[in-house]
Image (tube, rainbow, N blue to C red; front, side, top):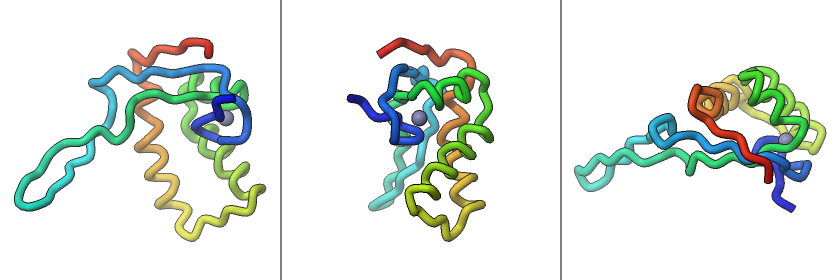
Length: 104
Ligand SMILES: [Zn+2]
């Protein structure tokens, strides 16, 4: 079973592939050298619950689903606005034109 990359609780049934040009970059600096690094591999497994949020490009509903599930599992968010901002930055590229969806 491949778990859903978003909620992590249900088996994934879809794979989303973000085109390389849409994968966000993080600039890593060390020893005077700065280099752009991809934030992720652009591959996202989604369950039947999360996939409609991705298809509908509804990052807010996707976040609500993820955070509600995490709270139910006992996770507490000390800094929820920061969490929201980070996840919006992470998931928004997935919802741009060019993302491909395949059944698993
Ligand atoms: Zn899910």
